[in-house]
Length: 189
Image: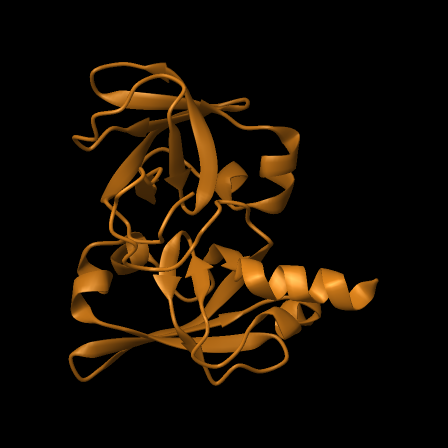
């Protein structure tokens, strides 16, 4: 379980086959620990003083943007929450629902506007002023449409996540609110 509050921005050290190596960025973690990498819950399979190694399953590669990562790419990192940690964002499981595309990322005064397009079949899982995780960042969507939503990004979030390295056209991992997913499942029965 995660909160969507990014703790560090790591750098891809290497990706070979299904093994992804990411810089540790001072995170004190052990093998077997869970870490959200761009919002994807992964298990540390190997550890060096400088990097964490993760094994990527075929399911992870097919549903996320992790298979597109290259050496030097920046990724959002969040260690799993512990009992008693502050819940500053929202419940994020690290189970990506879809990959969207950044269609707008522009400065609006001191803030930034982020617009993401996504497969419209997920539109019912978003609500204005609800919750969404974009590359693991807990954000509040507005102007939700059939296949697009917008988020206002404050300077702190922009400066402390991989958003500052993102560009229009980049693909981002999306995790929709868990409550909306259960409600949809219940309605389908």
